[in-house]
Image (cartoon, rainbow, N blue to C red; front, side):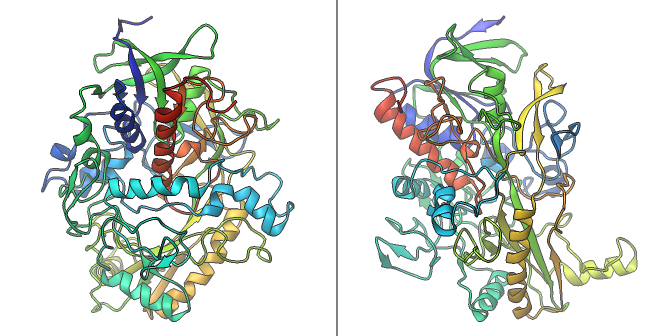
Length: 591
């Protein structure tokens, strides 16, 4: 029963992060009436990023100002199918966002595309190494869309974000010292690369010395003043070091709030409602057509919003929960392998190196930006021969001086006590003399790693929490250990006083206490086979054709790069299909 029923609109979008904002702009530009519903607060650069109060680690990262309120809704976790899941009570291993802009307001800004072979990973590995190379319980599958189809949209998306970077090859011609492993591009980045901080420069020199191919990271932190195709303006980054976990006070970090929302506010057919927690997508009597959504507003009233098209644009795994709560698609069954909603959950397989230099080196790691730094792709994707190594997947590697903070940014050498005079001396010696390298590994997908609805725990609205069944697998740990062993050679070439190597041992289990990344993917995998995918190649639900799903939840595999670039480009891909095909002839875009 609802307390109110709103006027029907053409499109209702659930979630207003990057993907929801892109879809809102593209569909309102097409003349459709659009309502976007965001469960969190109405956030923006002002007041949430106001200087100088935004440059405070205590409220932002210690007390999670911009993140999900775990007391209202959370998730449960277990490592195996036979275990009992327990709630994620305190932010640790990952940091889900909440509020207008979503995770796009407080992300770091590393802005990647995707490797062409990752879009067809199963086919690629079978063609190169044979059908028996992929482990039996690894459920990787192709996306159903090619890099060539997506490339123009990657290019446009980078222009919307104001991405800073250096291309290697444009239209078949080498144009500069970019990433030699990168696929061909139709244009250069809209802005030149960020300046390379001292720490990343040390990494670049050492990587070249051992025969690798370092390049400046593609960054959504603007290297200069910029106006994007929507008319939204950005200011040049000043390397304050407060990116990940913070709203950028300088309008330098791309976000939905800076790069899209100002243009949307000029659209008379667009409306954004904050504090609107969507409970379900409503279906008609046939269960084959959505009629809109039901949500709870800021006053606690239950509201129905009728719409002709529903777009699920929540963060990662939450799209799977929304479909499960709404009875859309077939829930994944890990025992039989049937169903696809909840399937193919992926994370990242991280390791790191920390180099400690002499106390008078003065590397000054507090100077930085979320997307700045130097990376190398020699061990990403299938850029190296996996045949004799016995694992699937790879990892980009980077030195990303994002800005060390006074509370969380003080690593110390192995063997340092956790308190007392020796601990104090180690902190004093280390804070401005430390360089960190990250091995940002891909995490593959497996038959017994999935999400479903928890049978025990409920949120504050009385709905089942999402339950994760997930643990690390030896394949991904083997990959991480191999790549890390190669990067140790770079660390040694940097001639540090000492080095910490942080890598998971074989048999390690997921530990939710320490932060790793927020890069979850899967749960509503895309593909060309309705038996193994929740949405088709246009991100349209197989069973309910007027429901589309956008975000990293549609990835059928885990990728090496951060997911934002691919998630947003796939959103442009789906929006293009809606505008050019679905609106003209509503129904299934694939027979």
